[in-house]
Every structure is written in structure tokens, then in C-alpha cells.
Length: 469
Image (cartoon, rainbow, N blue to C red; front, top):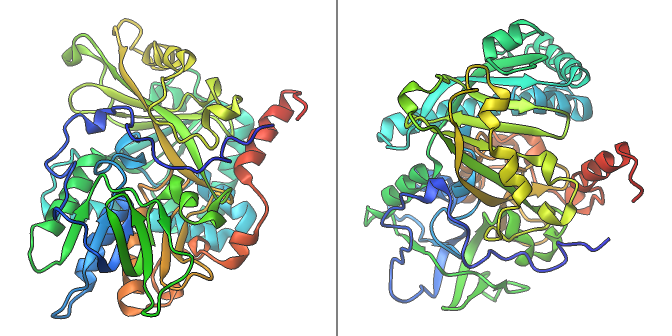
């Protein structure tokens, strides 16, 4: 089998348009200065959610008279990667992910992550309200529907264990069995459902606001340079303890370097090949001829068909529905998604066909709605080989930190991960005191782990279908 991630994972120069990037701001192609700075105290590579949140918390954490210089380098436009192409959710997972983690790492570690995600939702809500961010943020209920009885039973057992152990995140999670699940959710054929507090937003607008806030104050000493890809990092530091970053516009030296490059990390640090794996996925926007008369959806949704296959959707105030997923029609074709960094490639016809008629197939009352696909786009997530985010100092590379590998679930984790990482960078706070879940810490042992859970899940599906590998 050819390994499609063998090539260097660099961003495609021109990513496919997405709905979230249909109203770009004035910073989209921003360069703070005509010439690239030759050095900076802190350099952040990438300008998505991780970078925006990290800059925000760095500025809050630096309370002294002199704030460090912060330089953000982005290969393409602002928020043009996974954050600008996702499904619009800000959604903790207090049952499925938590149950999976409890089975492998224990209830305490799983509860820590579940509680952390709930805290992230509250923290982002507070930030948006305090800053009066115009990003369509809505806090509502998530309704996650299960279609497989075996899968439903498995995750309910895990969820019940967490609740019995007193996990805070499970206290507002309600379980609906077969019968009530379909009636309450409105989803045809629902075997069960979980409901809990979750949010949705316009991710690009949140990130644009964060960078605007950081750049508007002359005392912040922050600069942003888009369309400035970092092509390499020096193998060692110089005599002054600085790393050299090569770009087409010149070389920059950094005392502290943070990679928020997610799917593209291995292009700069080869030890992350097969540790943070590019994973191409798809989203769509569905519209109706007359939004005013379309059936009302008040919740966000996940539709879980099996342990590996699920869709996710949010209703928007304009009457449209953003739906992501469709894994069942492309997951078996490894090269379609695994190691694939081409977010400009034409969307597969079978993916287009999957989203057409989606609302009519799955939701009661939508049969005559005329709902149709208005647009489809793809994005590239960064899947961690052990399916856990990687946060903190990069082993054996002093002064380099990583914040990535969120495995398609970064929105309910990134904000407070950035807060903890900012404390590490500014105050030297030990990881254990940052508030970041213990399982997220990057370590030599994790980098040395040969297992690849992402490939294992694909092989398990193929094996279950009787395919010899």
C-alpha cells in the first residue's frame, strides 16, 4: 500500500472556498510591515484558532512593562486552515470521547478531559460576551443520536461509569432511549440520544476579532504576516539560543517558537510524521427555497451510525444548515483522506451525492422542504496517532513548543489549552499546574509510540468487511 503521507505535508497555495470564509475581514492578507522582522521573542507559526487564542492569552499573561515581541507567520490567509473550514461547532463531548478514554486511561483522566471541555465552552462564551464579538455564537443543546444499538449500549455504559464516579461534565447530560429518542430529536430511526449544553459560532469571525484586538494596541508588540510560509527550521539553535526559520521573504530568528501548524507539523519537524496526520474531510451548507417556512431546528446535532462513522450539523440564523461528515462514502478509500493535504481538490461526486437530500432522509418534517446543497468544501484536520492533542515543549528541542493534533475536536479544547501554554511560556509554569489535561502533554514516550490509531481504525473497518490488507 502506498503511503500518501510520505510527501512533505505543506498547505496547498489556494484552499477551496468555504462558507466561513465568504465574509473575510481586513486582516485576511495582512502584513504588519513591508519587510519581515529579522527576529522576535516569540514566533507562532500558523494563524488559526490555536494561534489566535495563544496570542490573546499571552497578552493577558504578560503584565510587566515590557511585553515580548510576538510574530505570527501564516502560510496562506488568516484562518484559512481547519478552523476556517470546520462545522461551526463549539461542542464538548461528555459521553462518547469520555467513555472511550475511560476504557483506556481510567475514569479520572477521562473525567478531567470531559470537565475541561465543558470549561472551555464557558470560557469562550465569557470571552465573546465580554468582548462583544460578532461571531453568531449561540449556546443551546446538542442532540447526539445513535443508530447502532450495540454502539449505543457501549457508550451508555461508559457514560454511566463516569456519572457514578461524579464526573461534573455528565451532570447535565440527559439520555433518551429508543422511542423518546426519535420523538425528541426528530431524527428518523434514532435508537438513542444524548443531550447536553453545546454551542455554535462563526469561527473565522472569532479568530479575526482576536487578531484585530491584539494588533490594534501599539503596546502589544504583535505583528502578523500572512502569505509567509515557513519552509524550514534550523536543526539547532544559534549561540544566542535562537531558532532560525526560513521563509520566501527571509529568515526570522526566534527565542521561543510555537508550532500551531496541526496537520502540517511534520513539514517542519520530521519527528511528527505519522504522529500528527493530515486528515481531509468535508462539510456542506444546505439551504431551503423559503427559510421562513422550513422546519425549525433549535439544537445542534450529531448522527452516529457506528463507532467510526458520524455526521454533525448546526442550524444557522439565516435558515441554512451546515452539515459535515459523509465518512461512509470516502473512508474506505485511504488516499482520499489519510495524509491528504489538498483542500483545493475537487469534491468527490459520491460526497456531493451524500449531502444531497440529507435533511429529507434523516429528519422528520423535512420531506417536502426542498432542502438542497448550496456549497461543499473540504478541510485538513490534524489527527494525532494516539488520538490525543499534543501540547507543550517538544522533546529534545529546547525553546520549541507544540499545540496541535486535536483530531478534529479542537474547538472545545483550544481556548484553555492556549491559556495554559501561555502560562508555561511567560512564567515557566510546570505542565501539571497549567490546568491542561495530563493526557495532552507531549512527551518522549508519546513520540516513540509506534502505534497509529488512525490507521488501526481504518484497518478495523476493512477487516470487518472481509478485506485482506
